[in-house]
Image 1 (cartoon, helix red, strand yellow):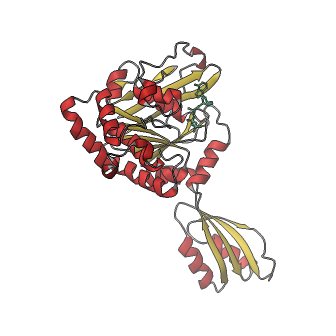
Image 2 (tube, helix red, strand yellow):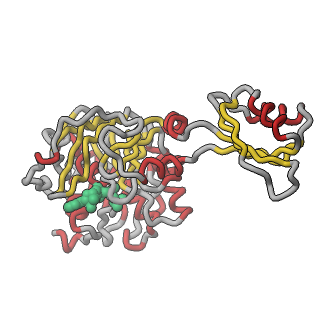
Image 3 (cartoon, rainbow, N blue to C red):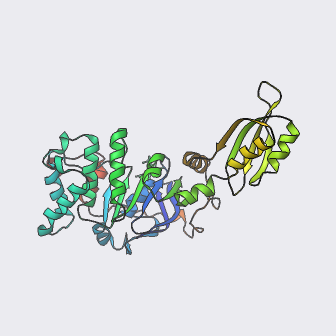
Length: 361
Ligand SMILES: Nc1ncnc2c1ncn2[C@@H]1O[C@H](COP(=O)(O)OP(=O)(O)OP(=O)(O)O)[C@@H](O)[C@H]1O
């Protein structure tokens, strides 16, 4: 449904995207994860046709985002980081307005607006002025304006930024409920968001894709094997041999004693492909040693993320990346990067603040 191929974006002397490629299958939610300044918004804006790439291509529902920009805009719903809302309109009036400018036929608008209101849990707020809504409800209105023309693809840029934990939860549930009917890209630097909502994840750092894949597969690939810390009482050499003989234990390292007593020893074990947790406990007890501590470690998504985004990636070192080497050159930056004819979302996003109908007409 979405294909990004060797995208490259240069702003003046800043290389914002470097050879980024990934794909999103129909009905999937892809978490587009990266630290601040990684290139998430730039990618979102290229995908939604609001910004041209310097080189490379992106397709949405088989349409090229640059060459077939209008066809793409009809098939994509976009929630920018700051939702473009008309504060002096009611929710319903605003959604009618958006449906009209998105080209929904007059006869279809009431049904489409009702659909968006229902999907986003806005029924009880439909007659309320947007300025009177809480941030969480405004975010729902932002999502409703993105789906009011029932696009197959939805692009959400940091959709829970600034929400309180309860609102976060509600908006995440809403996003999850939209998957299946829609293909979704959700950009975020909030790790629990990815865990809570996404099927697959693409991690970007300093403009380069550093990992992409199913969340659990990626975790398994990138977190390395499980390890155990343990403290055992008994003969040091005997314990070491017992631990080394356990199937699934790849390495045994002595990490000293606790302060006292000296008859206890601390070890760290590296597990192989099978998790030897139960076997460790059983072997120690069966051998007559005393088990004082057995603690399992597996890297978290946070560890993976930090590992991938802390060091500056260099060409050819991306881990699990889906991108072959770039054929593109940063020096080919276009000097004519003018966004296409402004839509309401365009204008609101470019001005970076909420606009009122008065100031915009
Ligand atoms: N209009 C612009 N002109 C010049 N540089 C820009 C422009 N927009 C973005 N950049 C730069 O491009 C890089 C990527 O920015 P982008 O906004 O895409 O990152 P991001 O991952 O969305 O970050 P954040 O999470 O902070 O929004 C950054 O170095 C940023 O400073």
